[in-house]
Length: 219
Image (cartoon, rainbow, N blue to C red; front, side, top):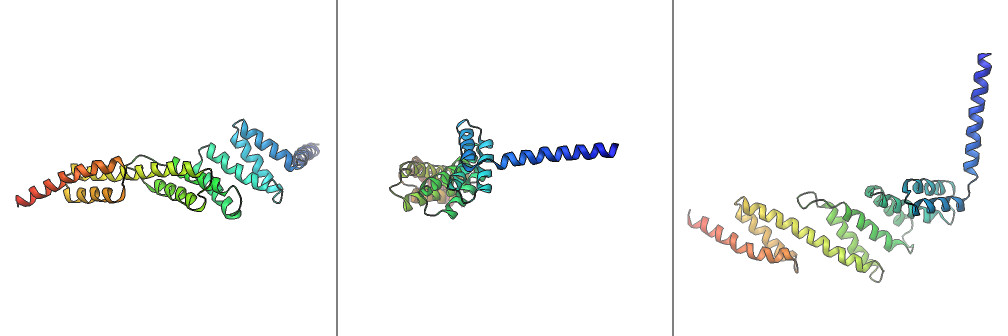
């Protein structure tokens, strides 16, 4: 009797699972697009990713598959999952290098890196990678609607890099390592024109030279 009951329960569970799977499989590409888009609009980004991922898996040759790839990347971006977003956008560009959305994709990759920028005393890799993406966008698509904002972000990135160099130079100056500070200030002047940091560096150079000369006289 117990064995029979177990068999009935197992069959019942399997039956429900099969019915659920059958129900899910009945969803068309259009339904999945609608679900994913609605979830995205309602800021349910995880649900949106799930719907668009299902669409991409079930209907890889659908006319909506490219849209699904892009929306998955956008949803990761909105969730501030920038590493996943960078991967998704980069994958999109590799798969569809001539798609009209490529300028947008490059811009978004740049923003992902930009949003990962930490304080000036931390790793500056995100600034450099962000800068490179924005430059690439302008070089490849100068007439893109994203080019104007890319130029503004390039200026911000350059300012960030200049701030880091100034931070290091001031550290050397405070540590009385005047020769190292001088080299950093000179680097700022040579590489960061039209920045506030350059103007500060110009003033600090004279201080470094005075300190260096004073030390040499006292030898």
